Image (cartoon, rainbow, N blue to C red; front, side):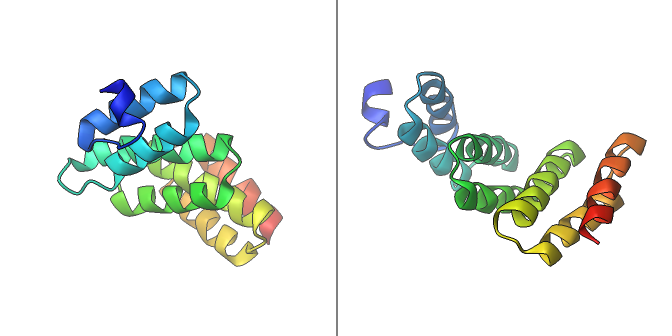
Length: 135
């Protein structure tokens, strides 16, 4: 399965698990393909799709494939979920739009949403500082 999965990723939980193995082995292209397959498999639970999408976004960001990472973070927002996941996605998108593609209004939109959805003073302050800088 590990050998065959590099050429043709399976679906669902198997793809997610293989993606994690491939990532640890530094087989980045295979890991991206598996995470993407798991995140786009609509037959799987939203929770599994969220985990796969988050892993995909983080890996793509580490690989400096920023536009693809931003698309994955956006997909994570659409999947919804725990506030911590949404905060991480909002922060990553705010950083991307502010520093990488120069869309300051889009960065501001994510910072405002981050302030509104923040849990605790620390998160709120972090997004507020970004928002003040953007304004």
